[in-house]
Image 1: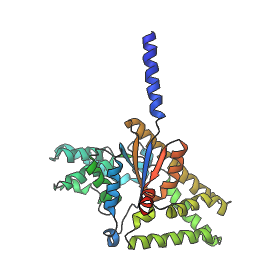
Image 2: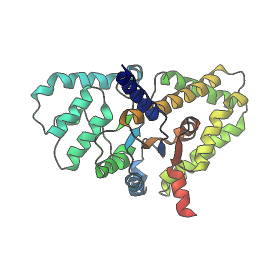
Image 3: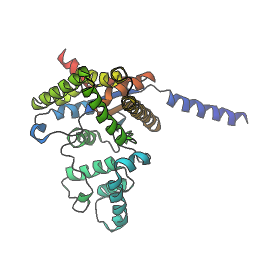
Image 4: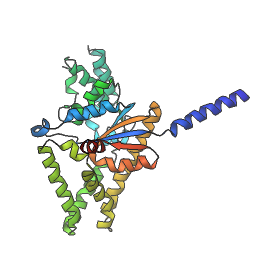
Length: 305
């Protein structure tokens, strides 16, 4: 009996140790799409090298995990149907194990890990002649340009999705209403900040500094301040309250999911690639739980000091 209790105590203690483990989290903010005209100007290799040098235990990405069926049904209904169609024909395919592993990921709606495996197939010079209809074009995304190449160098076998997007359609609708209320309510300051940020975004893109700019404190502050100040700018607007509440909820869920993935994998060092607008609020939630967070923007600043 005493031996059983002692064993149970050790198990509970080890579980507590995992949940209380302080994580070292590195966040890279990205754009989800890079314009063809300016893509070749960006220093993607520097970001790839940064990921490799960070050498994380796991890499988390802004992708919906397979168990978040609500988000998936709202955002990817057509893709889920394609995955079901592929599942019906999977046994008839004659492909390498790597390609078939990707196909199995796809049929379970783990789309980005499917794309990663198919990226590796193509990187080896092999064809995806039948699976190509299911494969998303990654040539303009952060995955094809930075995340997957770095993962390949590190020997990463799996990426961990942490996104949450259920209710996004309502969020986007309310967001448009908020912009109109700011405009017609003569709330010029937030609109000027937004337009100025967009202008600097385009300028940085044209000068080949886009990744540096969207990870800068200037860009982060301009966006997060807009969200934080909405109740002050439009105190009687339900849409403004809903926009802010949804954004904070989404980021908090994503932060919690990152911690959960780290616990499941018994990881200490976590790298997160996420749309640059998420950095500030996710950092707040993660640091509030006692974890250490650093960003690619801080790394760039250290090079310039």
